[in-house]
Amino acid sequence: MGEIDTSVPHPARRYNYWLGGKDHFAADRQSGDAIAAAFPIVVELARANRAFQRRSVAFLAQQGIRQFLDIGTGLPAPDNTHEVAQRAAPDSRVVYVDNDPIVMSHARALLQGDPRGRTAYIEADLRDPSAILRHPALRDTLDLNRPVGLLLISVLHFVHDEDQAATAVRTLMAALPAGSYLALSHGTMDFSTDAGVEAYEKMFAEGRTDVRARTQPVIRGFFEGSALVEPGMVAVSDWRAEDEPSQRPVSADLGIYAAVGRKL
Image (tube, rainbow, N blue to C red; front, side, top):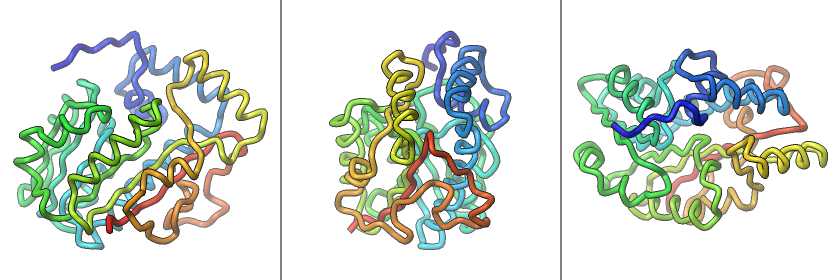
């Protein structure tokens, strides 16, 4: 298992803190509180993002997808990918990938799926997609000649370099056959005021947030070679929403885009 530096905040543990979990350290809480102080909507958005993950996995299962590659797994919480997928089809197969050894230890202990399907766990980084694709656990679990649902749920914005982010998605999607899907959510400041953008850029420059927000055109570029399914790219709480608009988080300071695309 890799080294764990609890003095450095990690996105998965901070996300767990926002979701009301218990698997986090002081650095994660301090980072989470600092971001929430600047952008109070962030906790509601984290929960909306988790709900998008559930809805997108359920949608993919309805489309007949039985294989899922979930990168940036995060710590276990209700409605993990295999739970949603295997409710629809018990033989679904899921590979979880995260670069936090704490996440992977929890995943191996807690994310035990239906024995009619399979779950596997890889400690790896999205910045090295080739290592993920050649990992024996992935090859033993998924058949890359059949469609796969690739989940990049609020993880790509932690890859700050534009070329590296684009290359990661392109490499992963190139390995999957036509008929595969990409489900993606990504932080943005497109919905923000000028003051909000200024506050965010200051935090990012000072290292007080590790999220590299991107614009809608840049995020759309990750879907090159794929056709977006309805309703296209929208605010995360609006993607095939199950609640009323009045119940969804709205903010002029911070946002998350969400979309699902089918590889052509």
